[in-house]
Amino acid sequence: MAIITLPTTTGFRNASFGLDGADSLLEYFDGGVQVTAYAKALWSFSFALPKTARANLSAWYGAIVQLSSLANVFQAGPPGYTGPSSSYAGATPLVNGGSQIGATINVDGATPSTLLFRAGDFFSFSAGGYSELKMVTADITTTVSGSATVAFWPPIRIAPANNAALQITSPITQFGFREPAARIDIDLMLNGDLSIAAVERFNP
Image (spheres, helix red, strand yellow):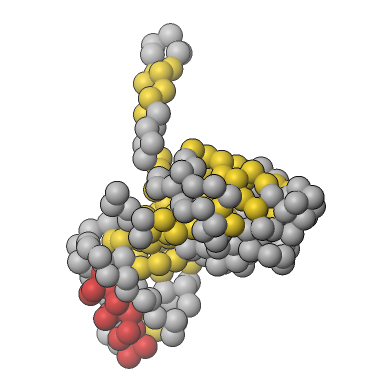
């Protein structure tokens, strides 16, 4: 797996970001339902560039040609996200204890008695060669010792190491193309359009 750096010469015209789960729902004729829950939950990310001169898309074309190999990925976070809505600017929280799995994580090393996250904030951590991106599901305030238990979704896939740092200002994960193709649409005025659809790539 190679990590391809996306160009920064052209910003996004629009972007879509979300979580794709795999739960299934069976609805019966009497109105009852049966839900089957699955562990799979992957972030999806799609975006389009503004119409621009073909020459300005050269670097993008070089990147997407490499990404048409499904073994390659790019790293990105939620579009427009600039950090916790709590405006937290204290010490970087660290994972407090190894072998943690599930949808909560114990952290320490943060500023004591401070609002660390609000529901809807994001963070990421590195484990097993991947960056896992999580959305916080409840407001989190640290204790007088600077520790906290953070609730989030989706659940942890690979347990981070003790004292691994949480990335809270620029959280990321890795994305790969949904299909092995690279296309840029060109009109007769030599302007180009580029749209990309990708899904979180994770190979345990």
